[in-house]
Image (cartoon, rainbow, N blue to C red; front, side):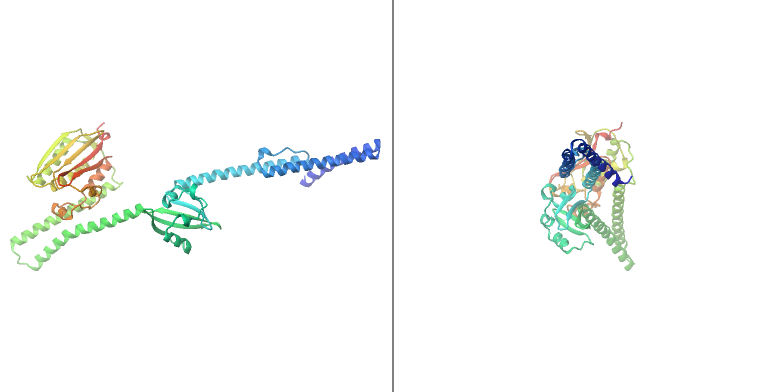
Amino acid sequence: MNPKLLFWVPALLRLGLVFAAAGIVWWMFGVVAGLSLALAGAVTALFVQLSYLHHLGEWLNEPHSARLPDGWGAWTDVFARLYRLRREDERHQAELTEWLARFRQAMQLLPEGVAIMDDVLFLEWCNTAAERHLGLTMERDKGLRVTNLVRHPDFIDYIILGRYEQPLTLSFRGRKLECRIIPFENRRQILVTHDATDTERIEAMRRDFIANASHELRTPLTVIVGFLEIAMSDPGLDVATRTTHLKLMTEQAQRMQRLIQDMLTLSRLESDEFPLRRERVDMKEMIGSVAAEARALSNGRHQVEVEIDGPDVMGSPEELRSAFANLASNAVRYSPDGGTVRLAWKRGDGELRFEVADCGIGIDPQHIPRLTERFYRVDKSRSRETQGTGLGLAIVKHVLLRHGGRLSIASTPGKGSTFTASLPNTSLPG
């Protein structure tokens, strides 16, 4: 049926009943009684309508579905439709609130900082990463201008110029940040920040690694090429000189071979393509072999002592032997003639330890945190004398990490150093 008819037909019927009753009273009791009844009916109907209008006005001030009044007559249908509309609106608001909460929760989990600003750069919302990157606090800084909160000249220039095609890189609060502004809607902007500190550090390490590796390879190559040029330019070179040159070239070639082998070993240890394969390791036999190599390297110039009071472990024999041999050879190289190198395998507090103690020159405390960096040298001239590659301790560190262990270093300048390779008790055979 037509909605207009649904409203007017009942209304006219109710009005007709009032007038019919007034007509009957008029006929029975006279014109005054009839008109009085008609007037009373009209006033009552008007009061009812005004009363419902008043209730509707009060409800519109605080429109909750639970507070919607009941109606009579046409108002029944009006209030019923308002109730359905309000319930639908409340459902949509609940869905929107839930979606917004989920969106903010997802934004909180992002590693990138996200800050939402209006068209005049007042902060509306930001996630935890943005607070950490820019030094913001959502509860304190909401509604404040971002350029007053992030006081960096490059950042302010970037926003004022409005050239958002390229990100801005700036150093702020000890971090290297990449900032980008993304306009959206008509009156809002998104500020996205990315912490590039680790990326910058890794890139610097990569550059240093290439530079150091190139330097380490260039030195022996220069020696070999130089002697080859001498041999080619002077065919009559005497046998003794030629033999000396060949010996030096062989030493430099072996140095390059060791360097390349260590670089390949380190690359393999860092790769996920070579998972650790554990097997039972006879520690007594391994440490005895490491001690024999140390004595051969010493060539009688040092006393090598061995103490074995620990069990066998589960791990990679090749990797553990490489790590322990590096520690032992370093101790021999940096100990003076007549010194003592002690190798010990024993139980510790909740762990197993391989300790290598020397009586060498020792290490200043400021150098100890960097000793496991690739090619890091405390004394470059001393390193050339000892023929080290500069990768030994980096290899030790990564071998221990693959086995769940760690390397600790204790040293006193002028008295010696102790390197301790610790493995967890979980390395014990089952």
